[in-house]
Amino acid sequence: SLSHSRIILCRKLDVLQKTADEIQEKTGNKVKAIATDVREPGSEIEVVSECIEEMGLPHLVVN
Image 1: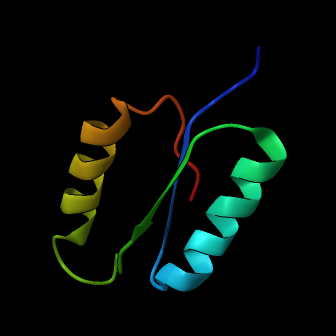
Image 2 (image 1 turned 60 degrees about the vertical axis):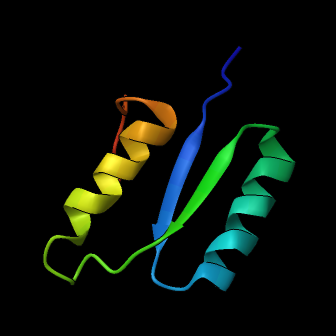
Image 3 (image 1 turned 180 degrees about the horizontal axis):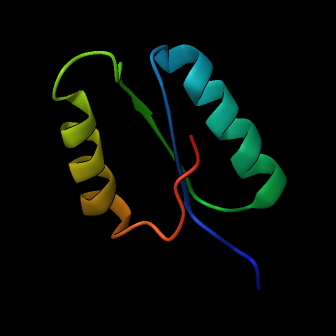
C-alpha cells in the first residue's frame, strides 16, 4: 500500500484546512494542517517539533 500521512503548512488556516480535507478525501490518507508563518524567526523550530510529535520523523520534506 502507498498510504502516507501528510503534514501541510500555510499561513492561512482556512485555505490550508480546505486543501487538507481535499487531499484526505481523494487519498484516504491522514492529513494534518498546521498554520504557521516561516518568515517569523523560530517558527520553523516550533513547527518541526510539532510535526515530529504528531507523526514522528519525516521521510520526505517538500518545500
